[in-house]
Amino acid sequence: MKFSEMTQDSWAELQLYLDTCLIPYTALTGKQSPVETTEALERLRDFLDLVEIPFKGRIMTYPAFHYACPDMSMALNTLSKQLKSSGFKYVVIMSSDGVLEQTQMTSADLVLSRSVLVQEVGEEGVSRFVGEKIRELWKR
Image (cartoon, rainbow, N blue to C red; front, side, top):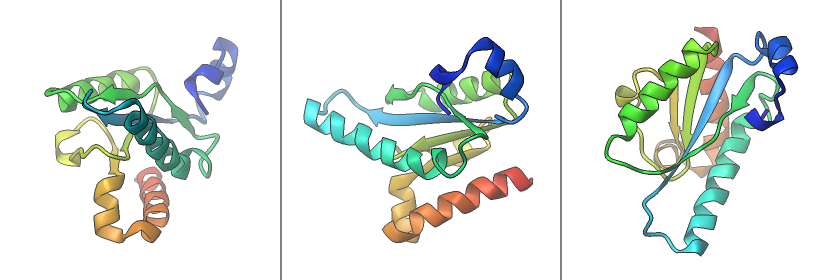
C-alpha cells in the first residue's frame, strides 16, 4: 500500500496490520540523462514489486529517496528511527541501483540492494531471496 492511499481513519484502523515500512532508494547522482533516470526509476519500481505485490496489506511504501548524498546512511538511519517511533515495527530499505550496507543502516531492519543480490544469487534467484528475507524479518 502506498502512503498516499491512506486516510486518517483508515490509518487508525489498519496501523496494527501495516507494521512494515518500505523506503525506496533510487541512488541517482544527477549525472543521468532523463532517459537514464526513467530507466533507474523503472528498475526500482520492478524491484519494489517483489515486496509490494506479494505482501500487500502488511507493507506501507513511503516516498523514495531519489538522490545519493555523502551522508545517505545517516539520513536513512534517522528516517528509520523516526518511522519506528511513529508506529512501524519494521523498516525495509530497497534500492535497485544503489549499494547500501546493512552494517551502515543500523536502524533499518532489512536492506535490500538489487545490484548486490544479482551478483550473489543471480537474476533468477532475486525474487525468491527477497521473499525469504521479508518472511525471516517477520519471524524474528
